[in-house]
Image 1 (cartoon, one colour):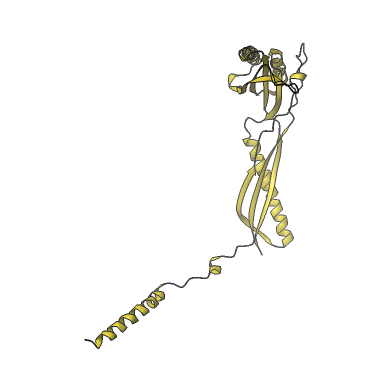
Image 2 (cartoon, one colour):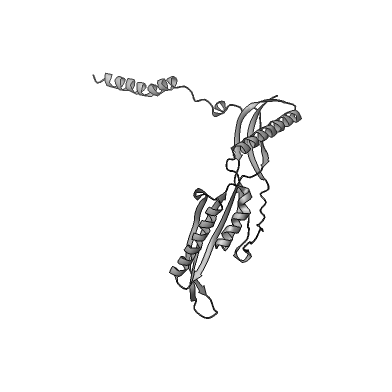
Length: 251
């Protein structure tokens, strides 16, 4: 028994050493990383844009009533009276309730500042601002004049837009694709290769209403009388769509 023990121990040791070798044979050898990276087919990565010009069918006017009084309550009361008259003028002009939205209401203390003296409270200022959508562009000038006559003393600006820009955007998309295809064919011809299919196409841009343009402020506001109407020209809008595409090329 004493003589066989070392042999048994040696056999166990041999098995322990050889076991990892057997496992290593069963496990697939790692594939070099460069074999996993498939070579990309040659391609053209290009961008283009399409634009169309359309007449607007929507106008948005931002205006407000600013009142001042010795007390906060009086300033708000005066403001409410004027805004009631303005709302009535909008209704007479044919503007529906859904097209009128209060965009701001503010009350703040007003101070006089004299050098080397503490500020002196002069009173309070109430500011009520309204955004109005006008769907008949022929009524823009008369509506502006009507609200000024009713008590509006600040007009921040006017902007023109589209009620539904879908049709104009689709036309711009077609123009953008045509421009992209033409550019891809030009590059392929210059490179002496054949143009393949489109691998991917992405879109950016699209219609966004322009920011309001200043119209006139309180110090410039003039109540229009008789047949004089503030002239407002709507002009045209530019609807633009940007796209980017990847074309396969064949050598």
